[in-house]
Length: 280
Image (cartoon, rainbow, N blue to C red; front, side, top):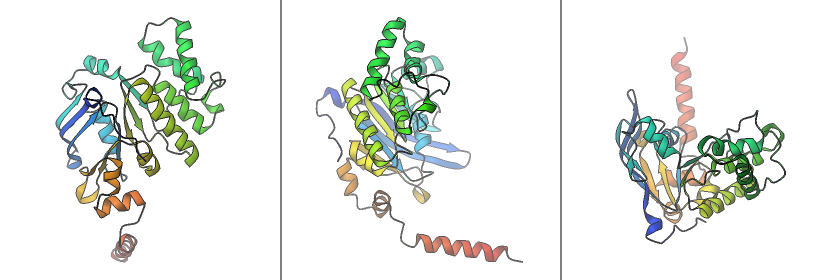
């Protein structure tokens, strides 16, 4: 069950505003006229099938790529026309939790978590070490900081990556498939930690995922991107309750993990047709 969004006026200020965003690669339209707002305090979920444009949208939101058309405002500033120095200023308020964790294998867990503090602050080393210990304690990794990533489990790596992403107490946390590859119990642990820690520092979260358990456990607002004829369009948007009640059969098939009616038959027909057409 999703957590209700904050109700105070201050908490509901827009953090990200996306208007009429289109992303094309040559003749292919990947994102098609997106409009949505992420408010402060939200855990905003971006979901959809493979190839729907989730990763492309995330790259636009973090400023790694510019849209073909449209406007993206973050913290009230237009990022689509920003130069590199202004983008870097905005990104210092971001935390990033990558699908793989992206921990540096040559560094210890403590050194990985310390990296953003060393790179972006002028804190003395002893204070950096104190902050690192605090962050590791928050994710349940006290006593493991001296280990290398190869020496810990997949779930521990995700928690270490979360500690690093939150090391600078960011205003905005981006998570790309944060629970990919985890079992249901560890998925719940990472979800719970993400929710508690972002709430503790007052951060807003944008999470790209197709894990339905996570979607409805932590999401406050959700958008679903379409594929096929509705490629890159928002086919559903709202609270977890609104998404569950959405009558669109494509939405219901996705959240229930069902195969579209006739899907297997259609695929089989196409396969047989392709084989026959290629026969001598």
